[in-house]
Length: 319
Image (cartoon, rainbow, N blue to C red; front, side, top):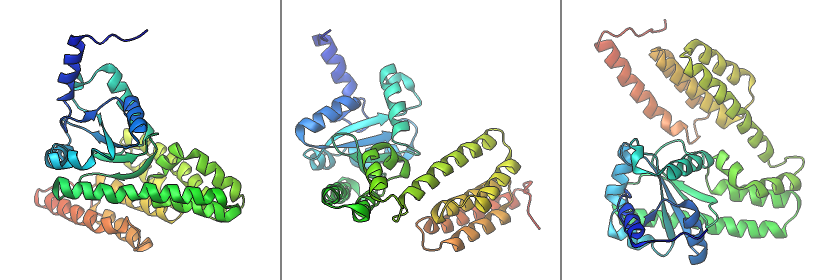
């Protein structure tokens, strides 16, 4: 059945458009956005936001998305899509709420704001978030990220002409260069993953093992969340210790687990043990991306420790 758009409907659509946090020029209809991007040969810029509660989301909208230099700077390259998860659900239709929840799960969104750049098919090739500097600098940042899609496509084309392990290496390099989450790679680049496995049956690239490690780690995290829901800190700590000792998850994931151990100890108010666990995590792989964040985490724990001591808290310090 064809939909009949009356003048009243058109007016309601127009009123709804101004409700977007970033102002005019955004849509919440993901499928329509993909169709438009395909027809206009543009990419998608998807803003996963919490428009009425997320401070950094509001800051990004106020400083960047609502500004004319941003809108002017992206109009030729992107279709803008807002995927909102507000506390006030009355802002959205039931259909939009359902769509946004499904997209958040599909793209593996862990925090807000998350900005994903995708091709017209919705396959992500870069991600970012809040950036200081205003709209002009943000557009420049997006231009740099768009180069990843060009590099991806060129690598994929070269891989079509290669065979064996060389083909696998080109594909692995292309996927890694996008700096996406492993779950996003698995969700949107299944054909490339199968091509890698076929071209590299002995897993000389180590790619298949890394995916297997990630799958096992996801299972590990699901079990860990079960302990969290039950407020069973001792059980969670034992679970993490076992995973570190027996998991053979690889260097990156093992370091994540060591940091998680520190966070559990922090929840138990064992501040010194938490700090030591973070020290161990940093020493385990001092050149990793995560290692750069550990000092900041330690500083926050030191502050919390001082506050607890000053307030006469019931912290449980280890001897």
